[in-house]
Length: 257
Image (cartoon, rainbow, N blue to C red; front, side, top):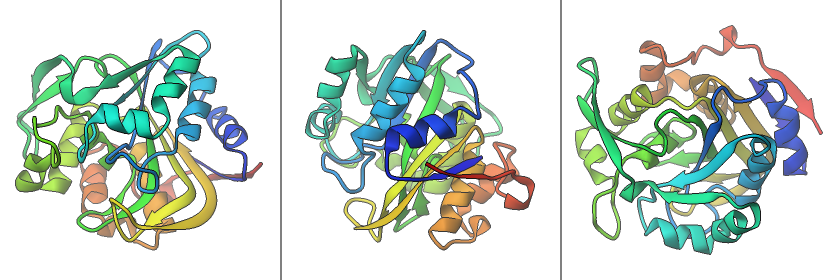
């Protein structure tokens, strides 16, 4: 895992990701957190542009999201993703409306079946999350960002509400069991504290990258002041073998650029 501090996001992403090499699949799907159509609690477009620059050569890169509290196309437009996609010639996909394949796991905690969007199937999936706290799950990082790949309900807001009813932490872990991120990038240049839809900004000047999303979330939780094992979905993901939340077992490379 790499924790890089700096000011220029393009240099930060390039320096962090060079430790992990090229993606294992040609189709690279970058999944930002665009829960709503305003900046603050959402993934800034410049970090996704930095990821595009890194992964773009020789690969098919797609930016995909399924917003929970607005229409995804509105978030893409308001937050600069439409203009970004136009400049780089990449596709934007609304995962709320994507074609899907029904998959199942008898060992799932609550989601014994899941509609897996075809866009993310057989892809190298990058969870491009924000360093953020959450009122229900403690933190919202690379694992919780995967709620956005679930097909949304056809309502204006609360498109992922069924997961709240079923168990939010358990649903996060189940979705990650169906499609685990291949790379976690957590933007902590300015963290979002005290509200998943509009907390206060806290400049921290860092970025986390790991090919183990559980470890990435564990260090993110620690930076936010939490014991990683006190965060239920991180602990469950650790227990189910999706990665390690025990930071004593993780090699952490710290850089400044």
